[in-house]
Image 1 (cartoon, one colour):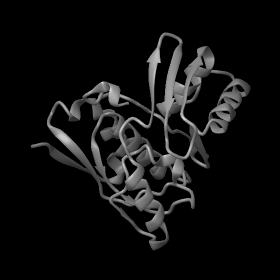
Image 2 (cartoon, helix red, strand yellow; image 1 turned 180 degrees about the vertical axis):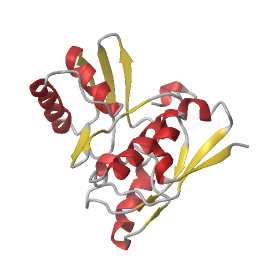
Image 3 (cartoon, one colour; image 1 turned 120 degrees about the vertical axis):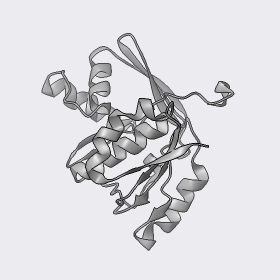
Length: 192
């Protein structure tokens, strides 16, 4: 039986860095102790969303509570859904999220000088896209929460393109790349 790991706010970054080690060690579930705001308005909310996204890509279940949230949560439905919520006004959106969640709805894979994205979230038209060269480098830097190496104008243009394609959220604490890097393929892999 898989074990679980409880994660408190100060540990978010260190647990995120250890995700590749957790499943082989028998951990199948993460439990976040603090509510997660989905507004991207603080470093803690950004770190928590990144952890949930990356844990989803590793195939880990995440038990978490949704704190403050925008009215529209549809861009997040590819991530492991919250098990609870703070605001009763989020009930309908969270229930819809739980019903529509399935692994592999919005993910990326990395190739030499490109990133391949598959997006079949229910509220959007299904899409497959390839991001190349400097835009791919910017995408990966943002996904890893590091500053892009591209010049400021090039990075801003890439971020605008990602936002237009519903592949990122821009908040006061930075940019949150929505697709996760898929690390665990389901059986059968053709399911995604």
